[in-house]
Image 1 (cartoon, rainbow, N blue to C red):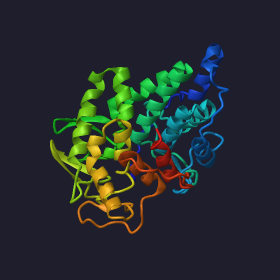
Image 2 (cartoon, rainbow, N blue to C red; image 1 turned 90 degrees about the horizontal axis):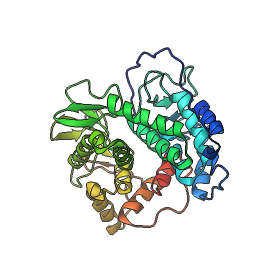
Image 3 (cartoon, one colour; image 1 turned 180 degrees about the vertical axis):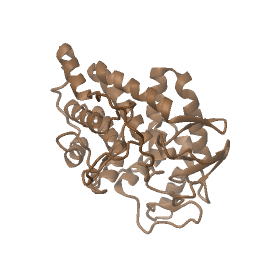
Image 4 (cartoon, rainbow, N blue to C red; image 1 turned 60 degrees about the horizontal axis):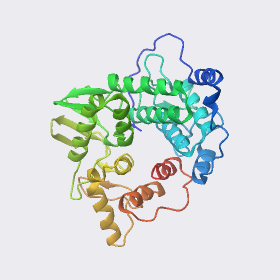
Amino acid sequence: MAADRIGILPQVDRRKFSLGMLVAFTAACNPGGNQGRAQQVTDTFWLQWRDRFVAPEGRVVDTGNGRISHSEGQSYGLILAERAGDRDAFERIAKWTQDTLGRDDMALHAWRYDPRQPNPVSDPNNATDGDIVIAWALARAGKRWGQSAWLERAAQIRKAIRQHCVITRFERTLLLPGITGFAEGPQVSLNPSYFVWPALDHFAKIDGTAMWAPVIRDAEAITRLSRFGAHQLPSDWVWMTGHDQVAPAADKPPRFGYDAIRMPLYAVIGGRTGLVQPVADWWRSCLAQNRAVPAWVDVITGEEANYALSSGGAAIAARLIHTAPPPVLDTDYFSASLQMLARL
């Protein structure tokens, strides 16, 4: 998730579309739409994740970050519930996400919900990775369970992402991390871990390659350009200042850390391990030296964290370099979520 969202936008005063109400109406008019609702969920890892992090109303709770919620976590809950075949959990998560984070003026979602604040959703700016995975999950679930409302909502989100979160700059088609705050200066601030390859490929399959091919092509190019330092590792955030000019973002620590670790995750799920081969080489070199893989590395100085990857990071490394993943689900939200996503 982006660390700093800026730019509160005015809200359009119109009735909010309720996904939960529409799903209920659709199901009532289409008895076949309930097919599979009573199927038993047997994925024990999913059941542990759901019981630890999903509140009864469908809010995914970030236990390591003040018990806030965000579109990223909601999106993880949706794709994991769909993959586990847990329709009840999917419906609860989808309804809370739309009712609480859904914007009135476009088919995107506010990025953050903080129950400690008088206004829990004070910043309407979005997180594009959350919207991407939400649309991906809704499209998969709509097809799986025969729900046209989810399919339509997924299409609306894809259209809004393409309209509001994609810009042309430096003769490239760039996927912004959010609507506001990332392309106001001479540079464009990008987060390559937001390039969710399996979702983008799914969008291209549904909408046609013409719509998404430029986004995918230039995201791949930016990923290749985001290789820095002795180990050629990506940084969490980058600044783009020209067609082939990419550098670690100057306003954030230049680390291969908690954001960038999702780059190999999405690459391996999306069949693009070649994009992150330097990461695989780095992790293998650590194992060859019989030492723990550090949680982060400064891509400029080479400084390393004095503690190891979380269980989530270790699960991603295991998926990429074919080692054994951690056998127990972590109790921390983000680490456990990475573990679950590494199983997709």
